[in-house]
Amino acid sequence: MKRLINATIHSLRGLRYTIAHEAAVRQEVIVLALAVLLGFFVAPSPAWYVAMIGVLLILLAVELLNTSIERLSDHVTPEHHTEIGIIKDAGSAAVFCLLLLAGLVWLAAIAVRFGFL
Image (cartoon, rainbow, N blue to C red; front, side, top):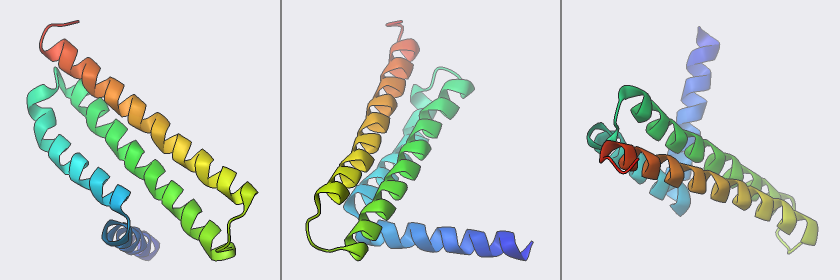
């Protein structure tokens, strides 16, 4: 039980730090908070609601991993390094893919909810 409590404390500390210091994380947390409320009105069913909020949670998780990669890369070498730049770009691409998926899920939910599909 102590390990679970410590893991939760560390996770919340990491989330609090990234919200305070990373604009992208801050923006995604704000969108998630708004989506939790808006999703009640937009989601065609409880399963849709879970998918709509779930995809935003996955997006936040990938953003946190991307932020971790970028911070570690900058710590290892603050100078520009071509290979590290490629690694950072790949992390950014992962976030971009999740942004597209989140947009598709929300658009599909809206289309189903309002009878376009």
